[in-house]
Every structure is written in structure tokens, then in C-alpha cells.
Length: 432
Image (cartoon, rainbow, N blue to C red; front, side):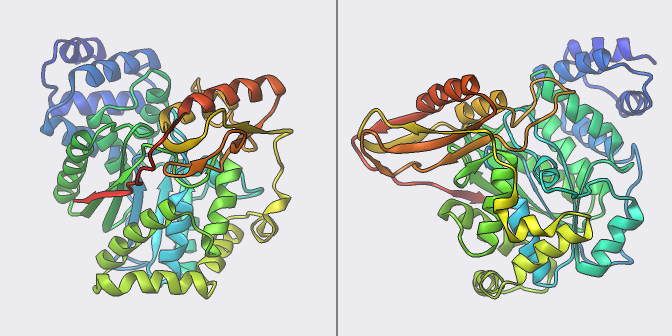
């Protein structure tokens, strides 16, 4: 068996055996298979797809490529949450402290940004001192002591996925249902959660551009969850426009802080509440779904959710003074407005165009080895359904140079569509 034959087989749209998939995963993890060989196979998978058996075999092979955590000594029921990614998606930073403050232990291994979508790890690293590189013992101890830990995929957990994930970002293979499903579920299986709530984003700023594909992905991940004995619920959410009012790592952390203090954008609130309700229900502690939204609001209003976020940051080495006073975060040297050239109502704010503009600003990565700039990003004053007059500020661009700012301004103007009719927003699409 060799990698060339496996590439040829998938290139010809033939089904790979369990042994061939395990060979690829094992040898790519240990370095015997090169990046360019892996890229060829991943591209063939992206073009030709995979059967259900192939997807299950790839998921399990990636989950078993490193350690598989057993968290039963911490709690008999750990709940996890994961998003398929989007533009302005800071939901994890809000949802996980809320759930932990309700006495439900949460353990999450997060990824970096992929394509135009932001990554939770990149946001956490924008907090000075925050340590995403925990040992297994540290990870488990944090959950025992404060009920929450958010770390990067830096332990020996699904290391094959970590390599494939980074490679996909740079070869145009971010929107493949088999690769997304196996990536997400391999991490979830390896990180030890008993129940999983998946935020499956759908729209222009997501990998799944339409509801049909989002449902296909949801059903595949639910099937993998059932096979692996992980209760899995998928919540389809809208990603046609950026989520919330900010895009960019530091800016999204600041928005998350505001949200945990009760100042939450309506679209963010809708997603947060629906995800939290499902996580509470799966935990077994809060079976009354109708009452759960009230309990969520309660821990925000009494400050317990915000205090839990501070506890998390402190426990993982972060400087809590930045959380207490977000004005301490370093700002981009250039902050300039995007002015409307028309009047009417915002009919569209294209999340994909916003995401691409953000990558060029330095929010995301074009090459695998690229570093990002936590300071840069966008703040939106006007979103879908809002009235706007000529000269109104649509958004603010946070950039590192006048040239980048000017280019981004033009890109953001192109992302907006202004018409004469007020249209309604759409948020939660469906729960599967």
C-alpha cells in the first residue's frame, strides 16, 4: 500500500477502504506522507466526495490519531459546542461561560480561522497572556476547579485533523461536507464530550451556502455522533451577513465582553439563546426548554456569566484587567469610517465579501504559515433592515495602513446593497 495508489484511486472517484484511509491518516500524521501528497488526496476528496462509510472511517481514524480523552472522572456528562464557522462568529466566547455558570461543565478544543471564517483560538490569543497550550492534566484540572476550559488543538488530540485542517485552508478545500464533518466530529470524539450541540452556519459567509447543504452536513454529523455514542443536536443558523457588530479578533473579544454584560446584538442573542437552551437540555439538568431562556438571562443579569469568563481567562494565564477594562486592548493605528453613498434600507451585507476583505486586512490567513493581526477588523453601524441616509457611517475599518484601509473601504461598500424597501432579518433557520 502506498500514498500514490490511494491518490490515484480517489482521483478516479473510487471508494477507499478503511485500511487505506488509516494508512493515509497515520502516515500523514507521522510525516511519511508529505504536505503536497496530502493536498492532492484532499483535493480529490473535495472534488469527488466520499461515501458514508469513508466519512465514518476518516473521522474515527483522525480521532484515534492521538489521545482520546476520558473525562468521566470529572463529570458523568460533559457538554460541548462547536460551530462550522462564520464571519463575526464570537459565539463560543459567550455561550461557554453562560453554560459553565449554570453548573454544567464544558470542555472545548477550538481551532484557528479557516478561510474567511474566524477561529476561537485566534480570538483567545488576542487576550494578553491567555494560554491555549494546556497539558491534558491542566485541561482536566481546570474543568474540575471552575467547570470550564477552552484550549487550542495543541495537545495530542486528533493531530491528523490539525494538519489536514491547516492544509485545507490554503488549497481551497474548506467547503467539502466530508472534510468538514470528519474534522469537527473527530475533534469532538477525541476531546471527551458526551453531548454535542453544533452550530451549523448557512449562507454567504459560511462553508454551506444553502440550507440543503447545511442539512446534509447536519445529518452526516448527527449520524457520526450516533455511531460514536455522542448525543448530537444541530442548530442551523443564518450567516448571510456577519454575526453581531464586529469582525476581527480583539474586536470580537470586546463584543463578547459586552454581550456577557447584557449588551447583546439581537442576532447574537438569538443564536446564543438557542444554542444554550439545547446544551442545557442535553445536560439533563435543565429539561424544561421553556424555562431555560429565563435562566440564561438570569446569569447574565446577575453577572455570573461574566465572572465565569473572567475566571476562565485568569485560570489560563490571561490578564483579567483587559476583560475588566477593554479599552486596554491595543487598537489598530488607522480607524476610518465607511460612508454611505445612498439612502434607503440595507437589503444586504454580504458576509463572504466582508470575510474576504477581513482576510486582506490581516484578520485571517492566506498562507498556512501566515500570522494574523489581532488589532484589525471591522465595526458595523448598519446591518440588514436598518435605514440609512447619504453620508451615514455604515462601518469603521480598523487597519494597519492607509492603503489597506482605503482598499477595505471600497470592498465593504461593495458588500452593502441599499434599496427602497425595509426587509426583515432571519436568524435561526432550523433545529435538527
